[in-house]
Length: 138
Image (cartoon, rainbow, N blue to C red; front, side):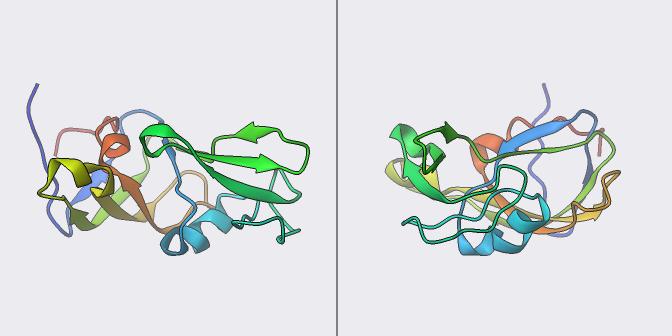
């Protein structure tokens, strides 16, 4: 195994489909809409949404996990899958120096090219999700 840490501006091409948790946070809001995930809030006050539709609220679980819950109590993870062949440009690398703050380490990407045309824009993922990405050799 070879370690590769992308630098700002590096372009990565997915060698396999990549599924990650898109965290419900303002910096991911535009991409959230393009991925057609339901709208969310800390309370049940959003009524429009994507494929799951309806009203949802955020549930913070253990180990920084995130779930959405609809008004019927059904919980689901806001996962997004980018298909093989998607090209991502690294826009930001944020690594926390303290071990107790490692849950905040993240990478931000911009989609340069994607086989699914609706998936475009900028989003961030936690470092753990980025480490599951399988890319073509840079």
